[in-house]
Length: 291
Image (cartoon, rainbow, N blue to C red; front, side, top):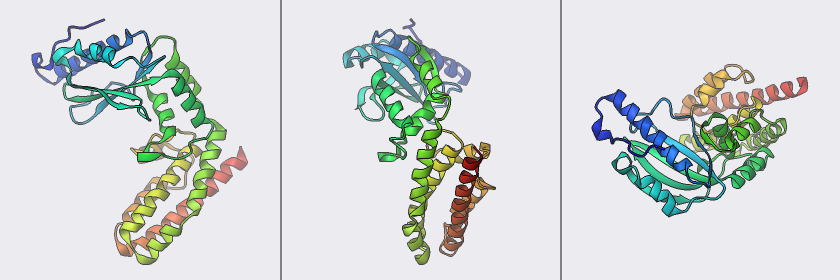
């Protein structure tokens, strides 16, 4: 256990600041792990490389038998003095992001999110059973939580909870893939808004309808490649690595967006889009028939 971590004021230079940030984070996680309720701690995406202030944050997931009381969590944070800035406890309570505390470490926003082990296990089973094939409110993707777990950096695992979850999610279930693919193929069949936007050459309406359609296309494509859909971030990078996809998929998707940005290009954008959707379906049926 390490309590006496120097504040950022005592360091000069970027390398010293990075080292200081890592020391503070390590000590913070050490201290949180001393609470008997805490079973596992992980950092989404890992803590390396240390992000620069204002260019990234730390999402710390803390799994517990029961959520530690506010006073106990506040006591843990207070031990760091000036090493933590802008400390806030219970900034949100419940929901998709658990019980949340917030601190800043050398300018880096750090979210400490507490969940119970039981609710986490129940959520994962519901997701893998296909009960949440689509995004929920505020563009939260339940299946994105599975993607997060596969990449999470395990910092503390008292009884192996996080390692067991990573093992559970190591193979994408075929049943889940079929549920997600069919769900989003059905949504792609509804082209009413897109058709109206094309007739009117209404760019903003077209982009509204296309955003919804693109979301379904991506989720079906990720499921086809047995990859948990993390979110809309960096989708093109994922698609480049996929083996199962329409020809020149990423290039054509970008062209759909580009052509849809002005009235005269909307009809051509939509034709290109329709061809992509048809090809994605053909690819799916070919893979399924060959399986």
